[in-house]
Each structure stands twice: as C-alpha cells, then as structure tokens.
Length: 259
Image 1: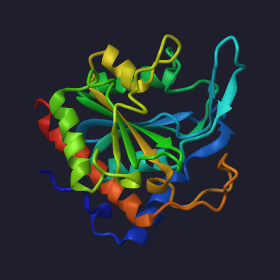
Image 2 (image 1 turned 90 degrees about the vertical axis):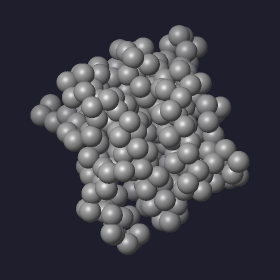
Image 3 (image 1 turned 30 degrees about the vertical axis):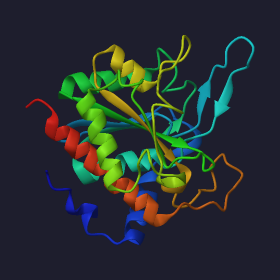
Image 4 (image 1 turned 45 degrees about the vertical axis):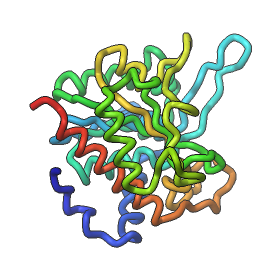
C-alpha cells in the first residue's frame, strides 16, 4: 500500500480538527459566487481517484410540480473532508464552495457534473468517491451507495466495506458503528434526479456515494451554517477515524486501477 502524505499523518487529533476547519473556511455556505470567482473548485492530484463534494454549500432543488423550488442546506465539512483526503492521499478533488442556483448532485444537467466528467476524462480517473452529509439522528455512521452494486465493481465495493470494517464501522455494527450498504441512500435517483454516482455509472466511470453522519463529520458548527443547532460538535476521535478510513479507501482503490 502507498504511504499517506506526511502533511497530516503524524498530527494529533486536535491538529487534524484545526486543519479540517481551515480547509472548510474556503466555503461560503450562504453566498453566491461573484462574477470573478468559481462556484466550485478543482484541485489536481496524483492518484487516479477523484473525491467529490457537490453539496459543500447551500444548493437549490426543484421538488416538481407539486413542490416549489427550495434551498437545501449544505452538507457541512464535506468540502473540507474532500480537500483533506486530497492532501493526504494525492487524490484529485472537486467541491462546491459557494451557494448554487442548481443542485450539483441531483440535477440531470448540472454544470458541476459536466466538469467532473471532464476532469475524469482528461486525467485518467478510474474511480469517483462522492461525499455527502447525513443528519446526526440517522442510525448509521456511514452509508455506502453503489446503486445496488451497479456503479462499481464487486472488488471496489468489497474494498470499501472491508476497509470500514477495519476501522470499526460495519454492517453488523449499531448506531455510529453501523455501515449501511445500499439501503438508505443507494444513489439510485429517479426520473427527475440523477445523483453523481448514477451519473458516473451512465458514463462507465466507477463510483461510490458516501453519506457521513454529522457526528463523524462536523468538528465545529459555523455561524453561517443553515442548521439552527449552532452548538453542535461532532466527536473528534470519530472524525479522525473516518478520515483515516476514507484515506485508506482512496489509496486501496487507486492501487487496483489499471496502470
């Protein structure tokens, strides 16, 4: 297995948290991009894996004829986590950094997904790891979505499941130690919604969706967060464990990519 970057590899947990907060600071949850700045940002890497965070900021979702268009809250710290994984592993990264008038994940024609596909094609990306946030009340720590096994190979799915099990998050676990596999959030979408993982499948680009419970994701809730629970803080140890698990997933899958 390839070694992780030393940038964060020897840090204490509190230093990891500070780094995650620093990386997240580039994101403005409630602000639209100005005319001279990007709504989403791409960071080049060295491994053929692309880590995506399409809901890094507030986004807009069309609920259909019976439901008006509404703003959906940001998946806090998914952008910071994507950037941290990039710095640790050498993965490529794309993340939403400003409020969007589209839903970068759900909209069939979302510009975000077109840029993602362009990055993948130009850089020989063999796998996309798409990060999302789940509410703290969910009965799992992590939910893996592979469109019921259709969005990636059996081997790639097994790598993810086996790695999380190594870090104490498994299908047999309970609460925050439970790994939900293709049940709550399989990434399947519907006739109006095409999640990134489903979009990647349609272009023969292997991908997996990772939904992360707030306890494993949010070190410190920011003042501009949509949630009214401003005092919420996740568990620093669980956050570090999550980052280590995802880092190993990235490197293990990259090692299986064609040379």
